[in-house]
Image (cartoon, rainbow, N blue to C red):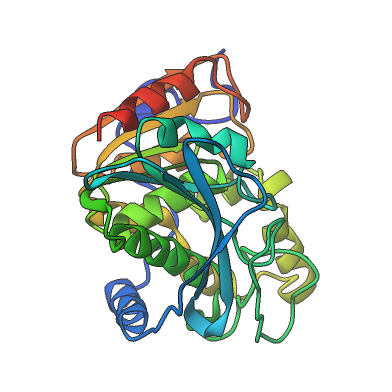
Length: 320
């Protein structure tokens, strides 16, 4: 499929992003991680109704930034006799963690698996809010225009790192053999998790969301998952007098700017026909990763299932 709406394949390989990076970006995330260090996560684990002969399935609860109680599904192998690998899963925008049965594959290999519910989306995690203005919809723009520390995705990015820490801290998990994966929003969160928790060993994002917002805008693709960008300007800055300021603020939660922190090996899947998360925005993040990395490119696919890629990810993470 010709790239009629984005860059040529050759330009994608060298594209380094459009959205501005705030001058104090590193300080912002250093402070966020310090806040995480000071938290008592108050972890609680409760048996789930769903169980299998080889997997112990539980509800995992922890307290994240802002005091929110955050939920994840936790699946542990019943007969693991030594420290074993782990995988953390992240779901798509507005969704929830995968069904228990969909998470069993790596547990059957002797892995611990944890799947996050993002705050205020389709799962059980609490969204404590605490901002003025926009709360009707729109997690990308939650907190936009105010204190950057109240941006919704700041909290969710830190939730991903905290969940990884909790899994790594389990007595039967080898903290040096933990991976992360997810698609769309889950792909962006996979990159954020690997950036904020550098012990992540392997990361397998698929068409990551939450990257290079300004490029989305310039392509006139602030629709679908990114529609709230246009809605925010229509409601709060119709003359675009604050446009540069707003995109700079979004830069705090732009995973392309976190990507250079990643130390994990990365395997990323991209569909070149993706008009939901445009290829150039995904390459903006990928091209900033300095660790070992590889791409699987589907020229004729959009923001949809990529044939065989789930099996590839399963095999890739099985090598932890």
